Image (cartoon, rainbow, N blue to C red; front, side, top):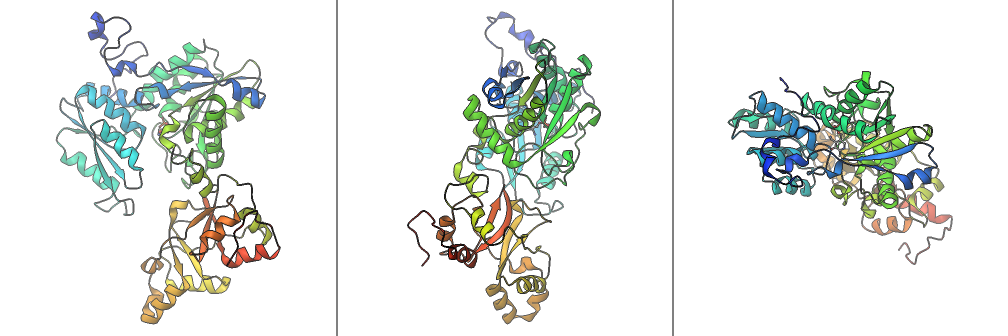
Length: 486
Ligand code: PMP
């Protein structure tokens, strides 16, 4: 794909039409892209006893509320210039997130239609947000293979082929994505810090932000340290691409913009540290960052702790925590995923009491039923979670469970069941509970459930049964409540 000259931070589309307007009136929302503020994180720096100065680049003040507005605009302008996007054309992109919002804004201004393809695991608010800008959203089932005609990938490809004048920006391979940051974010940082920036820290997804900014800053001063923050488990920091819960960052492949020649370090941050930092930044600084912003700040604090008094560390805040109120900022969600700890006796205490955590026993959906029965018999257990992939799992990789009662009935009806894959007799998933939640809550849940799947740090870590709880109670612990096992 050919690319035009990237826009600079002073030249904006629409400038020519703005001549009769008072200086304080922007000709359109597109002129409000970029020029985001930089703010010192003074309270956090004080709490951490930092010698270096720590500042945050607030990409939340872009009209779409994220760092992706800039590449969205650049990709469209470049596609127009290259004749790949023609008047009345339709932008088709598989995206559920911030890039979609940026593209929808540019499309509204410049008269294009938008079709976004996403999976049914995406939160309904995200679908509604894109529809609010007039975009069409096609939702595909997540539980089908990539080659299935109904899959996210197949549908996006088909829509590009079938839609007249369709243009697919493909942010993972589009050079206009990093170019947007080289042209605007980098120069802004250089000017705002008066050339005193010594370290730049940002989360990496498509790598557009980190690579684009690094390209500009390294050209000004090759000594500036560029540090990518990455969720633990993602390929950028040496993982397999899974499992992690932080959204918008980390990948299971290397996008075109990935360029280690420009990076001085890659810091892996756990989901637990990312989420607790997002909450801390909101409470300490009054800045509501999302999970990936929390991840970037956690990495930046590590960088800043090792930096000196003359250093100026800048961390990029890619989007707002408003998009994550039902997760990172929801106390029940955090507790259920095992990210927070209650004050009473917790499941962690109970598990410790009964000999410490044991490996999670599981079966894969394609294993024969016979093998599931073997695992249960050998380990003296009566249910098993059925999980895709290999440990450690994400909670979302738990597809369901198998139970000895169900297996016994199925095998009694037809012996051939023993050789069928486990997924053919899959039962519902076990209810989940966070490892830091109270034993009393487990007792409540075990009135109806035979076992619970315990999550710690967002990942399934063990199964808790009634006899595990009884073992804990035998030691006469006071559960601090008035509930009893009956
Ligand atoms: N954080 C969030 C919330 C994002 O949506 C993205 C974009 N995927 C990023 C960080 C990373 O930005 P980039 O794609 O430029 O690497």
